[in-house]
Image (cartoon, rainbow, N blue to C red; front, side):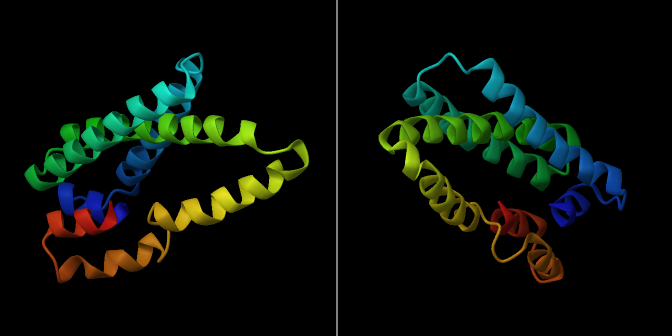
Length: 142
């Protein structure tokens, strides 16, 4: 993400990259707590819409080099990610026997991190910045 923020803003300030990542995580946590009374299905649907909208807004912000739109898109994406994550876990865990929940969670995490783009590491994708336009790099990253 730092390379995408750098490409979108033209600044090398690490605090800005940290703000973007922190806003995503904070928005996800707040959404999970605020929307915990929704059913798992409703959380999943709401999260899917928010995540899709947030990614599109983030890409628009990166392409237009508008930090405000990019940050807003990141917050919306965070709400989507948090609610999808919580809704998925809430719909899966009741089906596992108490002695099998740890294994289910382990499988969920092992499958979830590569699917979300954490492999290969994000830092290695930043090396492609010079070869691609910033929007193409953002598309690869997100």
